[in-house]
Length: 403
Image (cartoon, rainbow, N blue to C red; front, side, top):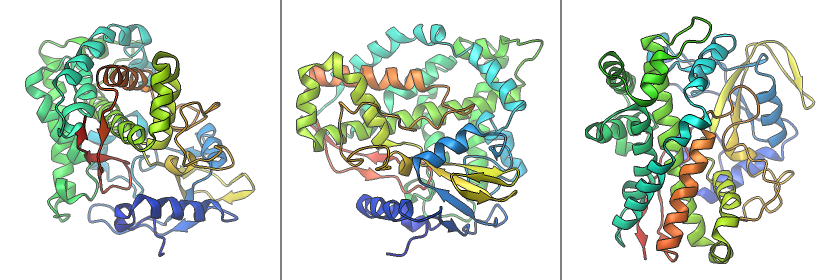
């Protein structure tokens, strides 16, 4: 099997082949090096080291001053062109002190107390979703995507009339090379990505300039030591929130149903004590779903990590999906085990300043929906998933449910 993580075709291969490929990479003496692919809207870079072991992901995450997120962007392997940063340059693509400033402002409006206000909304929406689900429905469209989309939009004060607009733009931004979203046309992909980003940014900026509500109002009015978010920062954060809080949670929910379908003994174990075992099941779902495949870093100085030397200016790519299947950390790593303890997965990123700000909300949404789903429809099953063709997001586009 030809193994090239930069080849879009690799990410369309069957999951068993992906598992085999990363097993081979973890077995190497040092991280493999890959050339970067050519894309129309960014210069071809020098290549990258693929970090696939759990220990490497942890160490790189704990040293953000060495492994930079802000030099060319963290969410893409090629260096991000300057015009992209206006829309996709939020704090996930920044280093301290700018990252710390922005996260400090955003965190004040994203506290557990703030999220607690939406607890009843999450429960009510989950109940509506499950009550309206029909056997034969596309579970991704009718259930998994609806809950996080509504909660994120409601948090930002965005009305129901804009849900489809937000959903379609975020799908396109994270569509990767999937022909369902690109139409098979990659020539003007950069133009269309920028247009989608601009439309999402304009939506939240119009709201902020008129009658901001919810989290938008809190962000607009946040003042930390005299600092406020600019309108551009607000727009970029909204795009990050939509992508990180909507797409990733929906994929964890979709994978969760598929995992329960393929592991009936684990489902039975969960149903024996739903409230007691659901938190562990959610963590195991996130581990195996690993909705974000990777983040990229650039090395700021020569640095030796776990016996391997990385040179200033080199790129490393942190493959969370692979780290979450590292047999040196997880016994029977491909098995779905809702009682797995400990479960030090990196499904929300590694330790350090870039750990997912919305991890608490994501856990709540996944927990509430599965509690509702397994209480009302304990025998629901998810069919063969139609996977997203993307190197960045481990996604499911469509999956029929039956009960």
